[in-house]
Amino acid sequence: MLTVDKDNTIHLTRGDTARLFIDRATNAVTGKEYVFTEEDEVTLTVKKTVMDTSPAVQIRVPGGEAFHIKPENTKALAFGRYIYDVQLTTAEGDVYTVIPPATFEILKEVT
Image (cartoon, rainbow, N blue to C red; front, side, top):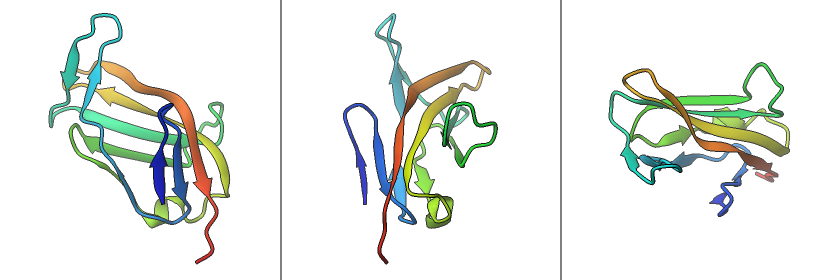
């Protein structure tokens, strides 16, 4: 089961497949929309805390593609709350955090 709250909190049952699609971002200052290109790279990083040096899960995709979270990405994670963000690296090398740190909750499973 995958749900995403309005505050960007992600709830995912451990070991489930999920696809998250982010194809654009809005500049908070100018209000301009930026549509990702295939030359851009978008990175989803999940850690137990922001202080961790190694991610629990990290997925990189070309801009405009969905993050494909596979069962093996979360199967070994302990149930509970983690933190994640999403970063855009443009083809020109500029880096932007398009989803600031938010909660990523690994939900319990029975099967």
